[in-house]
Length: 119
Image 1 (cartoon, rainbow, N blue to C red):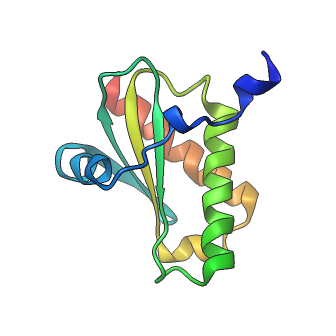
Image 2 (tube, helix red, strand yellow):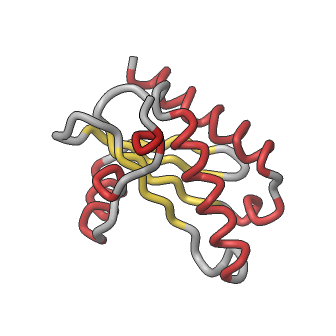
Image 3 (cartoon, helix red, strand yellow):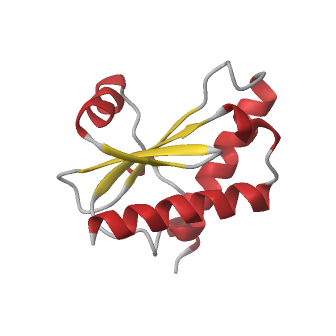
């Protein structure tokens, strides 16, 4: 794998509000104690990721840390996330105090549930 292929590019992200709204209205979702993952098929040849962390979760440092953790999980596990789906990972209040290992386990559990629902 080329080092440039490991990063999440702009084309691999949900960026516009209408994309998030469409996903929340038409997509399915799974959740656990820390996160909600909304997902829906897209017309592209790759999965895309969006991350939502509201101010209710905590200050900017906490919110940015959660977003970094979610993006890193997606980057490391992109090869296991099959299909052409859009995903929006929404942090719950409990995610504010979670360790990186706990967050990875929680996200792995949710993406496993998504796989079960879509296979």
